[in-house]
Image (cartoon, rainbow, N blue to C red; front, side, top):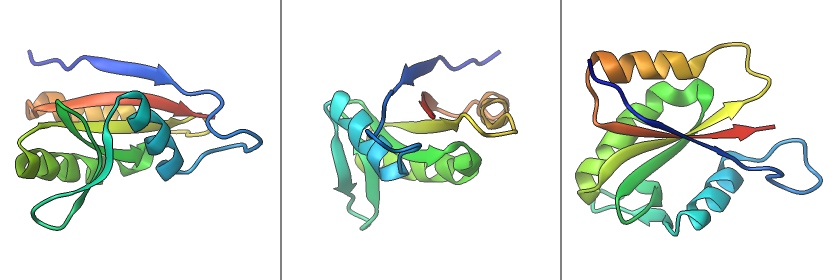
Length: 120
């Protein structure tokens, strides 16, 4: 059976003095730590949220995981990198979106890495 290894990273505090951070702020901080390039423009005119030496990464809040799959795969194809999602797990979420994402990845054996950050 195909299984993907998940990487869990906690960012705290994300933005001083705020209860939450925007998707952009989370991506900016995470991408900087990964020594990636933010908002990399592809040959197709689309923008990769974070491009590292190894990965083309789409950053999305947990509830947007479905869109993230397609974008990450597109970015990987157009940059010739591995596909990845920076999955922002919201503490106040009442649904287990991560399990849904993992089921799809495993069922279809998607070449997709998932990095997880928690948003407080």
